[in-house]
Amino acid sequence: MIQLIRGFKDILPEEAGLWQEIERIAADLFEDFGYREIRIPIMERTELFARSIGEDTDIVEKEMYTFPDRKGDLITLRPEATASIVRSYIQHKMYAADPVRKFYMTGPMFRRERPQKGRYRQFYQIDAEIFGVASPYADAELIYLLDTLFRRLGVDDVAAHINSLGCPACRPGFKSALLDYMADRMETLCVDCKRRSERNPLRALDCKVPDCRDAMADAPSILDHLCADCRDHFDTVKTALTDLGVPFEVDKRLVRGLDYYTRTTFEILTGSLGAQSAVAGGGRYDGLIEMLGGPSLPATGFAIGFDRLVEIVGMKAEDYQRAPKLFIAALGPHSQARAFGWSCALGTAGIQADMDFEGRSLKSQMKRADRSGAEYVLIVGEKELAEGGAVLRNMATKEQETISLRDLAAEIKKRLSLHP
Ligand code: ATP
Ligand code: MG
Image (cartoon, rainbow, N blue to C red; front, side, top):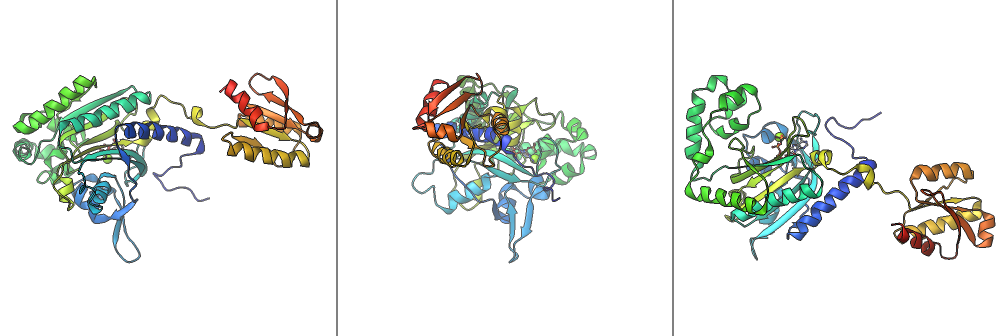
């Protein structure tokens, strides 16, 4: 038997209803805040990700699914959405009329990481971005949206961690202070941190290797090196969040794996997922649009790990499985033909109906009706057809009544509206 690829997974129908519900709740919230959906391709030229995410990152160094297509062009399955959204924004000159645009999207991402709980090679993200707004209120809005969404989804065990990464004016000063600190401890750092120290020393701050964590425990804080503009920016984010009642923690070790982040950076962490504790991450990336060939415009955004979110929502998958409202147990060929007509008409009217096509005994049809979770069962034989009335059984209360077959949809609708 052929099995799926390691690190990939099926989202089965029993679970898909919950995914749909979460997606709807997120989309409604984003739309209410003026975000519009964008759908971007699953593959892009490798260069787009290599340039935007940065050659020194885990993603580009070892996680991308990159391969030559049949003509030899290098293409990559998208590991994240931001680069593609920026590419699309530039390519379609979306900035021309008004540079301010808000986007959201949901879809699969691909990273060849070691599969484990909460970590897949195809996983899903819910993404939101604001382009063209330099103001700290845009960052605060995104964090507020995350907080609101998690509340709506019944997620409680989460905390927003925030930090500032500075800007091209103040980060170099911090980098050199950090490098001085690291120089004295180079021996204890892991090979990745050693190798990256020259170009991307900030990564050592969130290295997961225990020796690196110990060595970096007393590293200088970027917050002591921010320029006045970055400090004001960060202060306004914090004040806005406080005014909105969004709880947060300043975490000076929080840095992002991606090179293009500037100023505000944040992560939503949960205690319920073990080692894979980040449910969402994001921040400001003011340099990216220009770096990818567009005008110099600021941007900020986040990505939620959808798979991890599903694990921690306070909703149960079984509540989002749709059971039929009516099961028609038809006995005899004429009843079966009429039942088929009724079930199509009901389905068209938005009332899910089911029936058995095999002409089985009443007993086995009732068993199937029960298993289907149908609210009502209509029992129709040739005699009932001739008389124009049949027994309708309420599966929960076991009550039975005879109803007219003349306008079945109306009869069923009437009962459903009494017990919605
Ligand atoms: P992590 O530290 O867990 O590797 P990350 O920093 O690589 O996360 P981002 O690039 O910020 O993750 O992506 C945003 C979110 O996407 C993460 O917070 C996480 O919830 C989710 N995510 C990232 N990689 C995976 C994966 N391989 N499987 C499932 N979810 C993932
Ligand atoms: Mg990662």
